[in-house]
Image 1: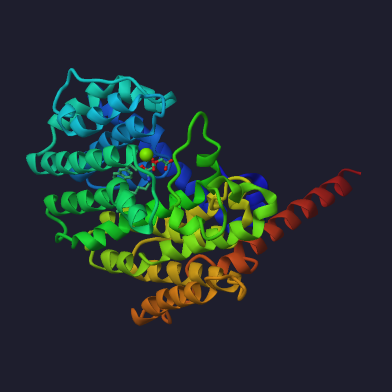
Image 2 (image 1 turned 135 degrees about the horizontal axis):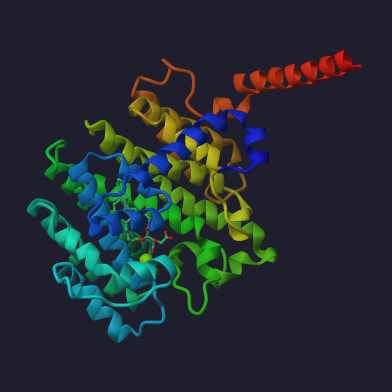
Length: 413
Ligand code: D61
Ligand code: MG
């Protein structure tokens, strides 16, 4: 749970944090009895910090499909990310992975920690996959095939241009968006979303990850793979790793801001995608990660800490997002508020200041044009800025305790 200091500073985090804690306890208790499904759900909780909780809230059929979709792609990504596998071994596995999911005998040991367990016991995932409906199986197979081929293409290729960057992100995350839209459609509750909007949903999440994880990725041993496109960083430094050195701080932050501005291009598509969803559980499943992403970008923008350590949203703020995201009004409010946090951080001397500002204003206009913003004051952020009613209540409780303590000691004398 969030640290005590953080809770004291943000006392109205407490209720959402407790609620989140109870929800994840509940989710862990609801592990199905069949051993292969038990494996899949306990694995999901271990490998996905953020997605497990939102997946868990979907209806049974769709939840099983999304859980397997996640694990199959996480396994594929484990192969992609394991730099100790020689290229001539790795590429054929990536390309044939969509066939391996049908084969209960197949496994390939790689990765570390919980990822290694997933790989070693992959037969449980295959077994569960084979129990899914045909519509779900076909969608998962199709996306796995296309993602594997795309990953194979980029094993020997650097991310040079912004087009390469968009193409790589399409393979590893845009396709997840396309696949999820197909699964939602196959579940019978949603229309089939246009591919370009589904792609944007993935790109926005993936680019946020790539920005936030700069330091973690560059410090990876033995050999790291980097996904910041040369076309962007070469405007600021000669080598990508130069961004982390203190003497390049100004350039680093400008480069970071360029990357954030690039990611913000996808926001309007994402808002359009979410506004078309009908099912409440699917809506929350999609909207929570998106709000986390805009929150993370607002936090990272113009923030040198991205090059020094981990920049992450406070756990209590995450809990609030999970607690308070229920409809499109909440989404518009969140995007509006987080853009408002980013906006005053734009420095007029930043080479992309005008571009960033016009991006932020376009996002705010999209939120305004929805016509819901004036109805309710605020979503998350206002409570960030003022002393909350919870704080006042806690103050009086403490006062009461001190008072009763003093009066009881006086009485005993
Ligand atoms: C709605 C809701 C969730 C969505 C969505 C639309 C559209 C796309 C996505 C989720 C995918 C976003 C991926 C962002 C996180 N990036 C990664 O995990 C990277 O790996 C990419 C390849 C495997 C993708 C597996 C995946 C991820 C999320 C899912 C899912 C499958 C299935 C269902 C729901 C969500 C990244 O991983 C390492 C890291 O971030 O630490 C990498 O290797 O680049
Ligand atoms: Mg990867």
